[in-house]
Length: 242
Picture 1 (cartoon, one colour):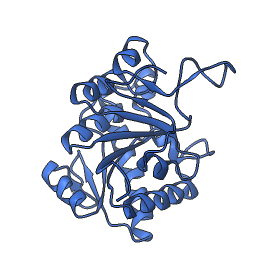
Picture 2 (cartoon, one colour; picture 1 turned 180 degrees about the vertical axis):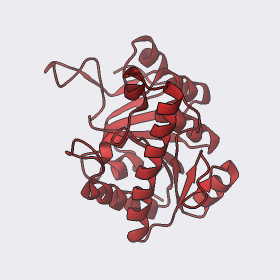
Picture 3 (cartoon, one colour; picture 1 turned 60 degrees about the vertical axis):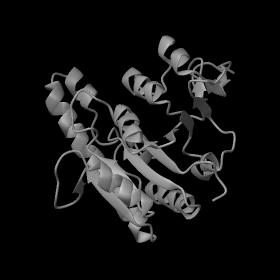
């Protein structure tokens, strides 16, 4: 296989799918991600994907404007399914077998989330896309990624973002911002670094699942991450801060 990873969970933000657009889904970006996923699957790695919905609807933002939080979160879950279906179609079009599983029942378009079925699909070489978050309001898709990674026994979470790692401050506003190569879970939690929300980090810490944060916009980075190249920032229990 040429890589140390057997099973990986890839977390894609909804914002990543809209590219340079201010809203919605950029087909070119989705097609580019799909082609990278195809390369990764060809190496023999089992790949599951959790996708967010912030490019279509953000529950927390709607709640802050007065909408009932639970209702807003359910709408956000449906937005993630729209993204997941788009990604699935793009993957299937280039010959990658996929299964979409949702935490909210949508039998006409997706399977219900069943852990054993998800694992079996992965074993058969299919990409499994998890939609609708965890099916519960008040939880983010970051937390869903950590939860699903633990459930399917993934060895690592790849968090593909718009930045090339984790910094000690905002690199867009501070030219002296330092990018970390590695961090401990405790350092991320104690310093409230914006890797994932605290619930997701705590779940990863409890289950000893490392998180690799890297730039999705650099072509080939998903494949580089799978092959173990030194990119982005790795968050893990035994890592020294560097």
